[in-house]
Length: 219
Image 1: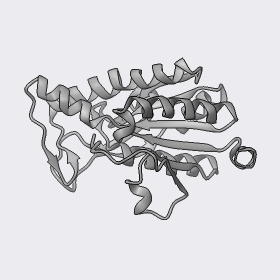
Image 2 (image 1 turned 90 degrees about the horizontal axis):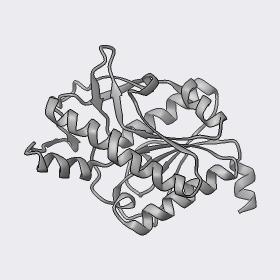
Image 3 (image 1 turned 135 degrees about the vertical axis):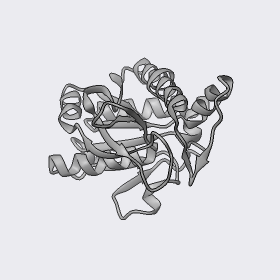
Image 4 (image 1 turned 90 degrees about the vertical axis):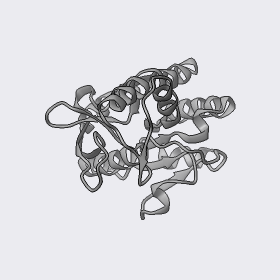
């Protein structure tokens, strides 16, 4: 472990958390412990989480139909309310609470807070309020991490008019990784908890948690 700590101490890891790791108790607990350990040995952590299964469940209870187009959730105004309520609310705070039980010093955010994730509407397909990231408030993330705080971010962004948008969690995490590195002159690491995701498609410094089996987690 010591060579690993020496290699990555002071580096930034952007961790995409979702899939089976969010629905299996033992994996949720292992994830929280791992995040706390990494933070304690001097690695700066940013977590971007999914939670699409919970969104689908709550939308169904409210009688709001779920439709996917090209693997992304079609997000009209009623669905956007559910996405924001679930991802930026219960899902986010459950993750934060679990990490903090291990003294991980996490704080829950979404892209609306401090203009953290600025987006524009995705226009290649008619998906409603689905956003593409155009800017990340990396100065705010730096401020948190410099004070030993682990940001836990729900993939909800905001456009120039203040309209919330749903963002695919993989895309949100990857976008933050790229922009954080560009803005801070640092090669941050993009970490996936499953073998799925953008690491398979991009030439990027990615790491995985292969013990976490894939699961449908489309936001």
